[in-house]
Image (cartoon, rainbow, N blue to C red; front, side):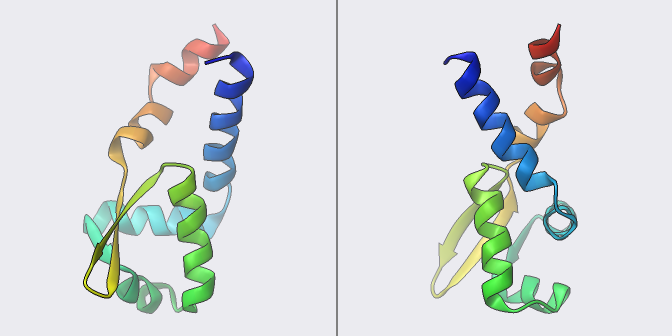
Length: 95
């Protein structure tokens, strides 16, 4: 992967993190483990369309994972990706 592609991936991840609502969603997923989108709507008092937008941004950045069970989608934090952002891996790009 070229440096430009690598930086593009990290740009997407950091843009996803640069929003208070999305950080709050990630915090809730950390706290709860796996949460139904219906519960997230209640927790954040947010319409399904607004919540879906934030979840889409987080999912496309690889920061959360989605699993469909019946008619509902359940989300959980992608701990492996979050750990990469909090680790030496990112720091090594700037050494």
